[in-house]
Length: 96
Image (cartoon, rainbow, N blue to C red):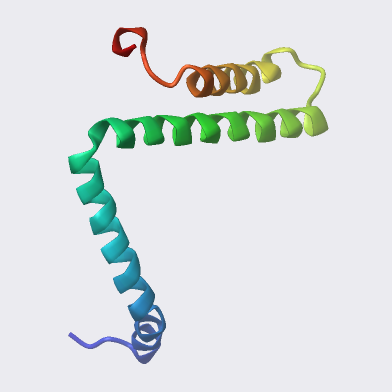
């Protein structure tokens, strides 16, 4: 297989970073196997923050470009409520 010269240059630039990221992901995976509760809690909180920030950005976009339609506010409102609830109540009641 013949690899173009530019691809070899790009692979050379990111080679050491790829190795470091690979080792970190392996360690993170091993930690997930050993501590599944902590990893699932962390994933839930991360996902809640992503939903909340997405809801904020979507609300700003709706406010700038189409603030008069009520239905355009539905998705950012639901994202903000869901993300906020997921962050404040990160695990179900049956785990308490």
